[in-house]
Image (cartoon, rainbow, N blue to C red; front, side, top):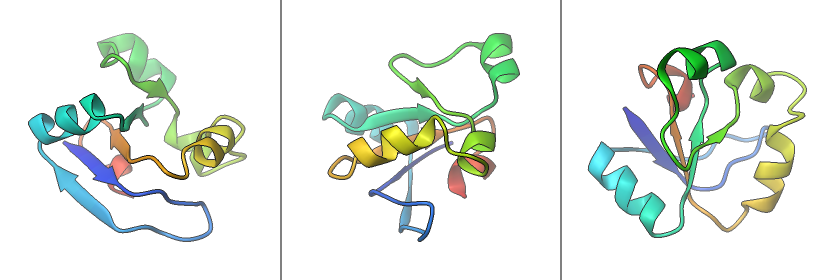
Amino acid sequence: LLLAFAVFTAACAADVAKATPAEAAQLVAAGAVLIDVREPAEWKASGVAAPALLLPMSDFNGAQTEWKAILDGAKDQTLVLYCRSGNRSGR
């Protein structure tokens, strides 16, 4: 399950729109940023969709050492997040 949503910050939640895989692919083709929010062990076990950025949800919920630069640089871009079940990406 892929979720597309407008720019968000750690301090405030954004509106989250659900997207089908086909809709998500269209968004990415149009310039949206694809982000895999699974954890490193999951990436190794099942691979990653190209051209996804690898940004674990644990970092978003923690120090944001990896997320901060992406969020700061993507203020005018659509972000498409995905995980194994849609639970983490929906948050």
